Length: 296
Image (tube, rainbow, N blue to C red; front, side):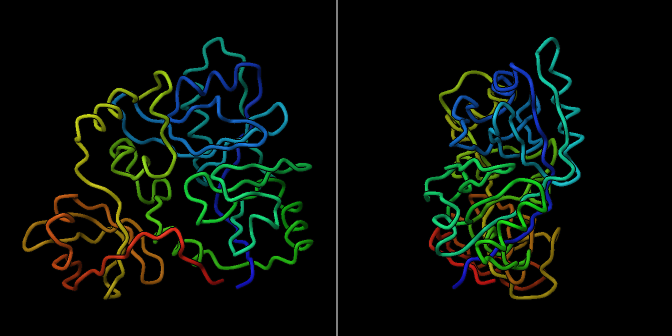
């Protein structure tokens, strides 16, 4: 199977100023001290009550930090971060000419000069390439000016693939895609699989929403999770409730081809998945496997 790339709908934000890294450190769920020119991370911004607001990737490009965040939500992320700026020396800028793509395939990492270690980063002129810190099985990401990315893909003879291919792989690995799968001001990180996706540092100091996140973990209060299923009916679409017997136990959050990402109660999973139905038809559980390969 050849390597291929998929343009992703993302916004890219640059943070400047001597306080940029320490400013983020007090706000987000991952340790910003781990962000270097050779390592990038995945993290989230929460409400003070520990509920989801934004998820994004953080990279270092020279003296700047770049945030790779959900498309069209960059201005909202800047507004929310700016509310905590106070006297910190930090400035925000949306990089309108920058784009993001995923690169997937058996030699994607080595072609881009990367290892398969989560978050491994290679700085290059005008852009960055890094192994996806959530799960290396979903490939690498490249961030930079759109024209520069296209030139790089042409140089390495990497052809474009369809977004559905990437999205189906993402769902099979039980990786959420921002507000498509996590409800703003409602979802928590642990019910959104963040503990399995290197999105939380349990040893760092306080950050916004840290108290509820830690309490949920240490008291075993996680009641639901995102789980991958195979659809058996075209009517099993986003927003469709999932039932076990006559009880609603979940909801479909994403669909790509016949793959579904479902927010579902853990006790419904533990008591057997063979009786889960949506739109009157059964769901087939997909085993989360990091060895899954995507075909463009």
